[in-house]
Image (cartoon, rainbow, N blue to C red; front, side):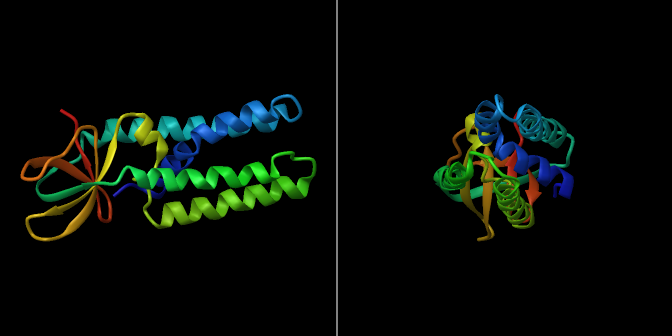
Length: 170
């Protein structure tokens, strides 16, 4: 299971596209804040890359897929939270900036504590897909995979978090 630091980095990576948007919107009036926001998003993106590289060293588990459903649409519902910050974009006052900061802090805590690492638009943009699978024992898990998964195949995967597997790429 990923450490709290890994989950925080994965959360930050999930907002990387938004950090790029904020960077451009804030660059002319709040240069240092724009750079800091972009750096946080970039740190998360780097974190996701390092995590996936390190995952290859973990002990994989063989799992046989009894049933499979694609769940990529869950990442789209996560994008809805991108819309809310645009209500407070001007950053004309400290109160607006702090309010937006509190919003992201609450979303971050929920994301990290709920092990929502699999709901991440950057995973989708990187070519990964999200599946809900049932294994032969009848247990149901989320699976992050780089390829299409079909019923009946046996996968080599690591437990990325409680109830979430990451298929290892060959």
